[in-house]
Amino acid sequence: LPNDLRGALFRNEFEVYYQPVIDAKTARPCGAEALVRWRHPVEGLISPDRFIWLAEESGLMEPLGEWILERACSDALSWPENIKVAVNISAAQFRTGNLFDVILCVLAESGLPPERLELEITESMLLQNKESYGVVIQQLKNIGISIVLDDFGTGYCSLSYLTRFSFDKVKIDKSFTKGLSNRADCAAVVASVLTLARGLDMVVTAEGVETKQQFQLLRAAGVNQVQGYLFGRPVPLAELDFSALEQQWQAEEA
Ligand code: C2E
Ligand code: CA
Ligand code: CA
Figure: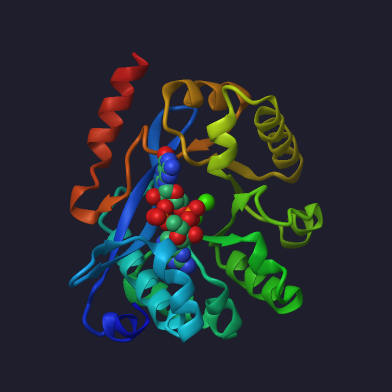
């Protein structure tokens, strides 16, 4: 794979899939997360867990990350205006020091309003170089982009990060969603994240929602947004159908 990866961007082998995000209160779609895939000529569709780290180590993550941002922003323009797009940002993109300029460029070229873009970063990324990353995060927030803390609760989880970087949103990791119905510790984590988020004025998304029971529990607990196979798997742009999703869940609610 490492050898194949080098030319994959040039050969146009990457694809961006989208997974819908649902507003928990209204059960209406409110966003979609961009998730990259690699269509390998021999191996078929390869999941990001298998190549993102390789791309980071080989220096490809910077151009690949930029390509994903361009794709996601231009795809999102075709969606209803209330639907935001979330893009995962790798540590490698932060390290270059020009992430802010890259994003300004991508927004200008695509025409997507910054208010419709969310950037997802993980805790582990913040451990590396707090000062300069904080500056970039603030610059991005200043122009209206939302910053999301992904996989919350799985990393080092220093609560001081939450106050230092003032995130707009936290995503509760799917491992907690999974244990919600049968593990008291998972329910306790979800409840305390919600308390924390309320105090810090952050939106809370739960990911990995696979059952109606999980959805009900999260909703009752006060989670703002939900995402998971229950609502839809990540799909290519052409298969993303917000109005079908809306109809389906309005019917479920009735
Ligand atoms: P992530 O950001 O936490 O993304 C959520 C992952 O959970 C996705 O896996 C998604 O397909 C999966 N998922 C969604 N709903 C469910 C569910 O109900 N149950 C279960 N079991 N899983 C669910 P995916 O697409 O394989 O991506 C894996 C990871 O790769 C992502 O985790 C993210 O860290 C990274 N990644 C994906 N796309 C990108 C990208 O464009 N850039 C960067 N830097 N990283 C990416
Ligand atoms: Ca994510
Ligand atoms: Ca996640």
